[in-house]
Length: 260
Image (cartoon, rainbow, N blue to C red):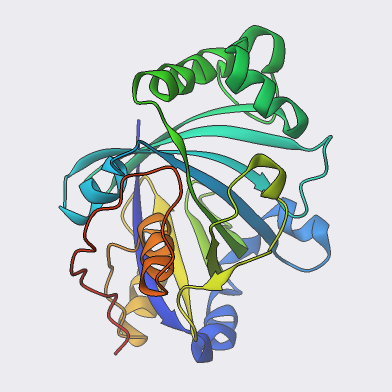
């Protein structure tokens, strides 16, 4: 079953107040707590076809869509786990296909398609070889190629009384045209996407608890369609930088996230 996902654009000025308000109700995600910094860096290379269909489907407001990415964390050493991911979205409901493997094995897998050799069980993945097979199906069927790299620092929390409710603050969101697999762990060429703002994400299977409803209302937040993938491409195109490996179509007028 998919879960609901809502995103809010929040001024960096509200971050400390938000932490203080949430403190009685949430705890830091264990993985982030182990870093010693209360956060970790998320690094994703997004894949699209030559026509950037995933990008333009989002701009067109298509309700049922898929995004394809390879995701790693922090500096991504060669022996780190990374993930092949398909993120499926149906209006506000999301689900994922996720397959773990070694960073050093991604290119051999994409080259050979041998998911039985390179994809392993673990990292909480369910039936990971089947998830990898699905990714490879779309990779070949749609002739996917790397389009943009998106990085950010994630400060994640879980609700103390219902751990299926997850709240994340995604800060310093940035994108880069350096999209080879060797570039995944680097910040080279990154451009900030939302200066002065972070993205608050709420993922849940149930309605918001009252304290979270009050917080959203107090900050006067409205959930928005904030796609890091499309915004990452937009900021590069506004700088006059062409996206590699794709046909170049005219830049469409995109409604920018509300910042008032």
